Length: 244
Picture 1: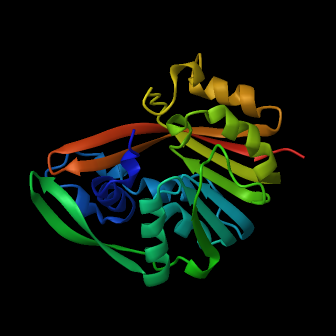
Picture 2: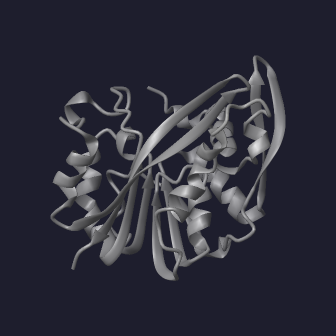
């Protein structure tokens, strides 16, 4: 089965999701409250991680890079990893050049040209992007003060493999942030690898031996597919502290 995240349409959709201005996503007639679901790739960092200086951060499932750039503002080194070569190529282009042109799909064959721009407060010299599989990460990554994995868990074929690796990836005293809309789908994760109960309970079963659960909050997000079709979803964010 082809990887949908290598398609030009999904690349453009995620560049819009990560970098667009409000007016480039929502029409003036949007219902009240919809703007609160924008800028998800920024909010998962600023609302869940204390912005104090840290040494190393890992952004797993970084997509086209916005959260990694946000982390670079207060971390000396950031590694962003994603399975999609197209997403990583786009993130690297933004790191190296600051801007990337793309197309917003409006309807049918109609598109609007837009430009994604690296945030001004980012420190691109601190960021490394690479392709990789979150369930078979390279062994020499080392440990991190911050690990951020937004909407990744329910897109892995065997998410328990990543959960088993997390204690080695987060330094004692470090922070882990996981967000997931809990949309378990057979096309990504075989049903036998889904949680048997609530996702948060399943995460605790895998993580409680090494982490303390500090906070759980809902974080909405909005993905624009066309001018008249949007995905509004509610991610569950959980923030964990690594024990000694």
